[in-house]
Image 1 (cartoon, rainbow, N blue to C red):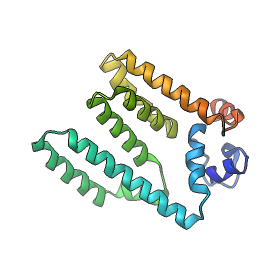
Image 2 (cartoon, rainbow, N blue to C red):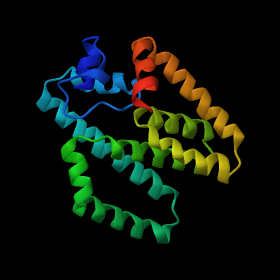
Image 3 (cartoon, rainbow, N blue to C red):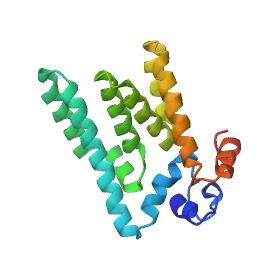
Image 4 (cartoon, one colour):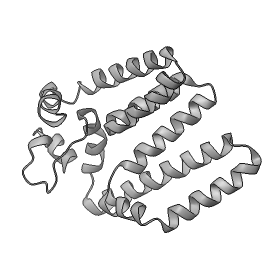
Length: 183
């Protein structure tokens, strides 16, 4: 509903038709708008495909960075949890973005482990702009690892993405988000 509201030029944060308020950052609106251009049935199928495939990619990327003896145990447990997890099934049925954000943060960790720090920072900033709590991974990168260059890459990519989104997302949505939603 937020994507459709954004496509129609109305503020998705004050959409009175929604059962729950839209609380995601404004930079996420083009992503949600992409699904809103399709009819509901196809959009839900595309969402499920995006959701599951992002997790599979993250799982495979992480598995490739693990030592051989841990890899099979990790993959087996992850697949078992995926197939039997009631919370996952609830998130999937509600169309929540949490697994997509988690997948991006996992791939960000893999990127950092593979010494692709800028790509890692970009992925973490995308995850943060889709749903804010991904920012807490910065504690690991910046505080624990004392990597200020990573913070600079992260902030730069956040700035670039936000400025690029301003080409299609009105600044008044950002203002409304900061003043009314964030608090």
